Length: 229
Image (cartoon, rainbow, N blue to C red; front, side):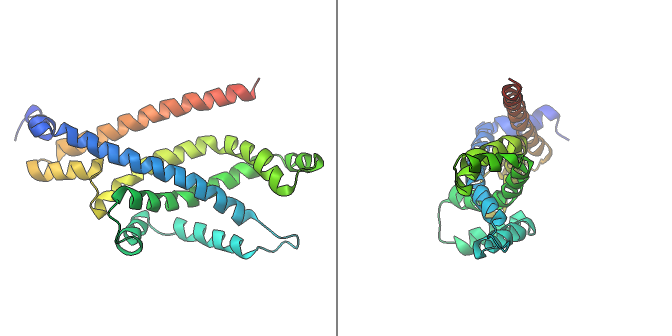
């Protein structure tokens, strides 16, 4: 059996293979970033639509559509959604990052919708009444008074959703994209030694997520400090 040093050399040093890992990491971060932005936009719209009710208490049609979207996305595997987007809906597209970002963005949007709903429900109902008493419409009060507070309440959960999204992008290798996980698998195949490439990829994921977690925790603490002023 080759020594650990030899395995490390073959997995990272030979032919500058370490550069492949970082190219794969770049793809992973790029997909996660655009998917997170799309997920927040879709999730916010879906949340508001899902919570919408007429004065008689019944749901409008767009509310049922939002409810169905959230229910279906949360009830089906992410990898199946990715494959449907890749091989069916956007099979003629040559932009892998676009297709993957749309797929993960739609998936994340369903979870973000529920996170924001929880944030809205955590806002005191008196905020809506206060906004209405100032002459704002229900929509204006929701947009300018309730939603900003809801996002602040949901901020920690949204950050956790981004970290989860970053790890979930590891499945893009199923459709042939060279993300970090696929690069590790490809190098394992070339070297016939899967241990070091896979452990290396795991370490890179861990370091990136650890750094993000530290940054997010600092940001969250600053937000709490501003609340206490």
